[in-house]
Every structure is written in C-alpha cells, then in structure tokens.
Length: 119
Image (cartoon, rainbow, N blue to C red; front, side, top):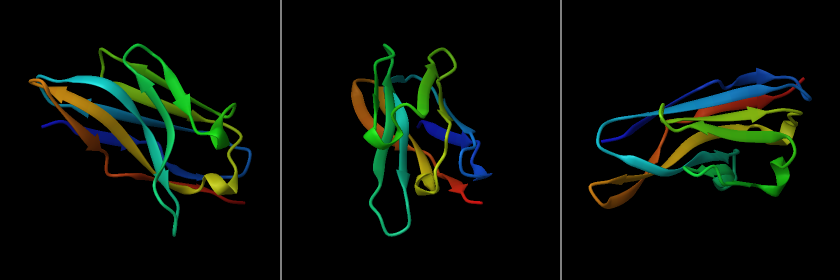
C-alpha cells in the first residue's frame, strides 16, 4: 500500500510564498502522475497542478504563472512552489498520486495540509 505524506503548509501574508512537498512511500509501484488538489470551505475539491513521470505539467488557470510543480522521480517526491499567494488560495491542499502496482491502477491521497493566506 502506498502512503503519501505532505508537509509545508501554514499561514502566509498575501504576496508571500510557500512550498509544499509530498513523498510517496511503499514498495513495488510506479507513479505515472502526481499532483496537488485543494478544497476551500464550502467548495468542491479542484485540481491545482499535476505532473507526469515524463515531466508534462498541467495547471489550473487560477494559479498559472504563480505556482510551479516539480517532481523527483527516484525519490517519489512532488513539490509545489507557490508564489504571489492570494487570499483566494486559502484551502486544504491534498497530494495526489496515480499509482500502478502489479498492473492495477489506483488513486492515492495525502491527509491534507492547510494553507492560509491572510494579513
């Protein structure tokens, strides 16, 4: 079973930066895609950014030009660098991974980390 462990959330002022990281642990698996979703109070969970094992990326329009996703494949790690943060970025951020193990594909989620952008 693959586990995702996130770190890096917190409180930051508007215009500030944060970096989220997520590490996948387990055995006998591949990760075709990793990324981040977020969920604000009263709203549905939404995609923030995703990156494939070949480094193709996709971003939500609301974060393009401000957030950068990257991954370290040997370390099964995905990072989200968030710059120029806005109050509307406030949400719980969830790490996501598409896992393939023994030819079976599943989705894995982290426990979530709170990001609060406020003065």
